[in-house]
Amino acid sequence: SSSSATASLSRSSDSSLATTSSTAATGNWSAVSLIRANLADEEARHLMIMSDGGDEASLRLCFQLGLLDHGKVAVLFGSDFEGDRNELETCLAIQRLKRWMAEGRVCAVVRGDGLFESLYDMLNQHYIIYEGRRFVRLALGTHSRLCPVHPRFRLLVTIDRRRAMALAPPLLNRFEKQVLQRRALLT
Image 1: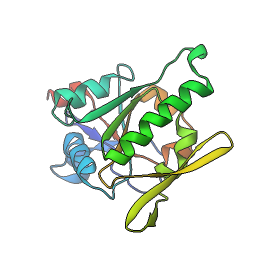
Image 2: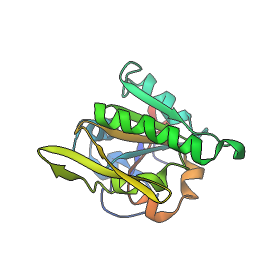
Image 3: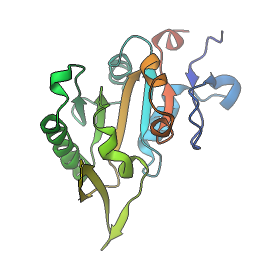
Image 4: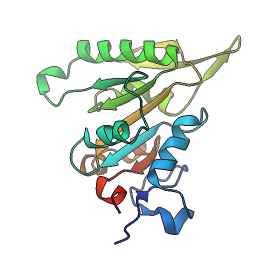
């Protein structure tokens, strides 16, 4: 087992969650530097950060490492409770995302499984340019709407690595995936 941070390096449509040693695969690149580069790149795919220790573990690490700034990041927590997974809660979450997309915020989503179906065009980066502005179609049930997207908007999904492995491969394909683990950062 390598002592360096691990990172998934592919931006292709490879749905594999396999990771390689960042030192062996990229020279001096670490998961932290790859995440930082992704967040700075307006053309990069949206980011899924996986770690061991629960869905919130990688979010905490991102704040502790200075990858995310509490004052600039909007965090959206989904729920694992069946009663919370209804159309009203999904609609409210989509409304918040729409506002953050238009503002160009970084939006960190934890337990957002119920939202992804509405965000496929955004995750695929199927943007429509009209009069110099970027728009994307968001869907909720049978309804869809074009919404403005600021070029600096970034979606960051944090998830436990075991839960990520259970997600559908077509969903995984839409993200740049990185593995961020505290033990790898300590060595």
